[in-house]
Image (cartoon, rainbow, N blue to C red; front, side, top):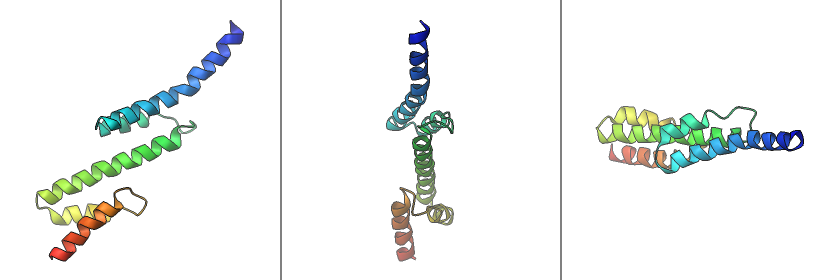
Length: 109
């Protein structure tokens, strides 16, 4: 039993973070972004899944921030929205979208 128990236990332990990451992606795909972040944050720093989880968290945070800026924009709170749009860096997947909105804002003023 010991001969089989150790490898099986190790396999289950190593795949726990894979399952956690997959659950975070599942939440993301359902549009449950906050839940996705909560699950991804459970992956420990030493895990092989940590970098992927951190990337998912960053994209999710940017997604939520972008949506907040759009909501502010639609409410007419342009100054607040512009501040948020300007906060996106080139590394963000939302950078080009934010720049596009900012260009429209500049052209309309």
